Image (cartoon, rainbow, N blue to C red; front, side):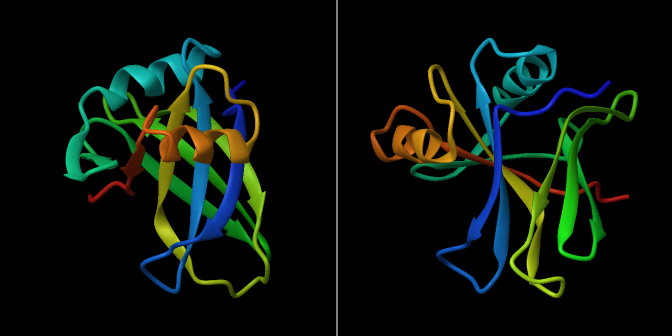
Length: 133
């Protein structure tokens, strides 16, 4: 069974007209969260509070079904999904970014807790894109 992130939600991208899938993971959480946490250390800084992972470190897959989308984080070495969640979009034709944004935090439980951790400088955004094959 694939582990779930502590929190998963969709929110508007402040720089675009797309929606972003967001995963909140706890430091030292379940097995999948720990694998993702380890991979986040390979992130490359793109802005002050934003990092990105290359698909050779971790990538995401999205499967849409009407107004829901299932997003999986996959390790490229063996193609195994380590975290997955299904989120609901506001409409079936919503414009969704092809990547997922991951926020890690020690004590967060809800989406608002993860966002607050970034705002306080305790965490950062990490963008994980699709595989580029």
